Length: 433
Image (cartoon, rainbow, N blue to C red):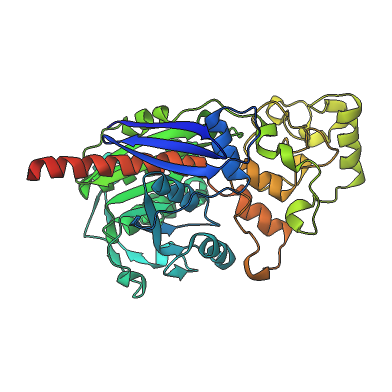
């Protein structure tokens, strides 16, 4: 399947053309990017700074169910992918145990139905065997009455938490694949009858001792889906963060090939961008919003930051570190200063604390603000983390931002999924002719 994209600055706009299946889909954003950037980098920087794509009035809806949705990083990425080929995402339902995150997702991206519930409580299923030979004992069934009325689903997306992969103290529970949320997500997607199922997780999910990825692939193939999977890196797609996620793509009735997702991802590759590209215009931004206020640090951490700047270094030496972070190469980034001319390290929920990673600002004696973290994480400025005057707490902001899927990853995986479906449609049309 041909999938390419091209960008061009034209007047006060930046045009993007996506070539797919012999057609070209054009979209544009207002150009508010730095003048020296190339066209592609300028397009994505303009989006980060708040430019939005005008949705086509006759856009065909893409019905999506988003489970383990969090604040909406993956959902936003899939929305961007749909917009790139002239479609509009209609979130038929979103699900997460965090009711406030569901509210944020719904406010920003819209949703017909929303559930603050455990995904495991929504579906009934039984698994026979594990690994590649896994199959369902019977077709998975939706057991939640309201969710059962969502109707047809084009795409099911999910980012199940990975705690089930490290449950080392309960061997009996670990041996039952129904208790793994990754497998539960597969069952829910199949129960909904979704044409496409897209799952994301940490890259180490592939090494799970319970073999959940192989079990998920086996279940999907036994249910009539073609399966492809790969690890996609945000910095290889033109982002300013070294973040990697594992994606599993399943398309019903289509043998898409094991390497499909990796090959399509390479066609969307772009040079990594430096930290300055993402947050250069926010260095001295000031407002009363908690999003724009760096956390207050302890005197000892302030002294560590002063040491970095006074010696013009980026890694804190051992004699300035607490004992728990000495003499270990794996901790070199902790208490570190960010590099202005390089992509950031992975943003986690600990971005407000220098002891959690390399989160000291490159140019200012502070850690990054939540808004800066959101930018690095790929959330545009229009994305509202405080809808309806929602009271903000730092720990909640850290969770909603740090746990999110970078939308550029969702964009690449989502566009790959839509390309696979488009290929199926093209084959069906040729067959009908």
